[in-house]
Image (cartoon, rainbow, N blue to C red; front, side, top):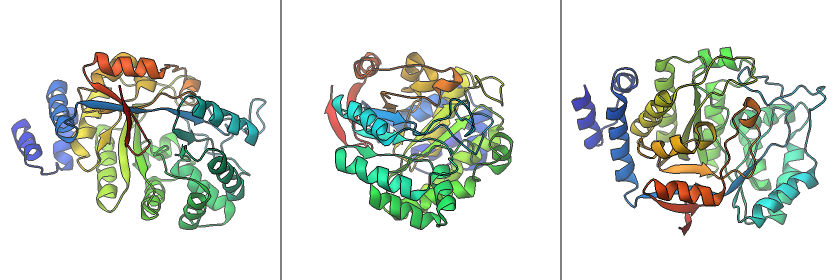
Amino acid sequence: MLNEVTKKIDTGVPLDRAEAFWLLTEAELLAVGKLADGIRRRLHPENRVTFVVDRNVNYTNVCESRCKFCAFFREASAPDAYVLAEEDIYAKIGELVAQGGTQLLMQGGLHPTLDITWFEKLFREIKRRFPQVQNHSLSPAEISHIATLSGLDVRETLGRLHAAGLDSVPGGGAEILVDEVRREISPNKIGWAGWARVMAEAARLGMPTTATMMFGSRERPEDIVEHLFRVRELQAKGGSFTAFIPWTYQPGNTELGGKTASGVEYLKVLALSRVVLDNIPNVQASWVTQGAKMAQVALFFGANDLGGTMLEENVVAAAGCTFRMSREEMVALIRSAGFTPARRTTTYAILQEY
């Protein structure tokens, strides 16, 4: 089977689900890694590994979704529930700009009262004060929730948010794009078709997007494969995914519990992602959940990007995972792995090589 798969990859023929399933469940890790590394080298022959200087601003922790895998959300009545004041948000963005940051990722929960007018006012003011910052914010679940709360459809909601200053849409909340799994781990969140609808509408508006996958909770190997193929098919139908980011479930402080995926499992899924997603240019390693050393290894298993330096991150940290990375540490990490470090924009334009 490996020879047939290799031949298809070498000739640019996409794999099918059965071949991807075999790679995930039967093939040796290093064999899949070698395939992924070859694709990475072909797509990115300059031997460059990129990153963005960014900040995650979690505007609220109040969420009606109550996902079983999430340690961050709070009920509205909880003593530590919050909605950030606008001036606090602007102060956080100001700190990002002062450090040369270019990307703002604002995400929170499905808040019961924050409708589209709240976000429009906030985004307009962010764009007025910080025009140099890419507002890469709100997951498809948040956008769908804002639409419902505001009595709008997804297209109008995205159009209004885009006009107010939302530049691009991150792929958070994808988890596993199989509804059987979603019903078990996040029963109150939109199904996979709802996630896909938001991303398709964003692409029609010319907005760049990313796609993610959280694995290691309750899914089966065939669900991971189905997720990858659904992302690939969305991209083929006119999607605007610039990158794919697989990361592992973090069980600490969650209702779902259990254990996280091993490093071997992470590398296998990462490599398979690079092999299957032949129409998405970039694959990102998750140092936030894997740590710096595993992120270096991931660069030889298909990843060409290390995401953001993350001046602030609260959601994964709530599950007890608190890796941190400065710009200098990121540059040193990439260089010591044998690559040229490069700071990029959200849409992968190179700003500076180191």
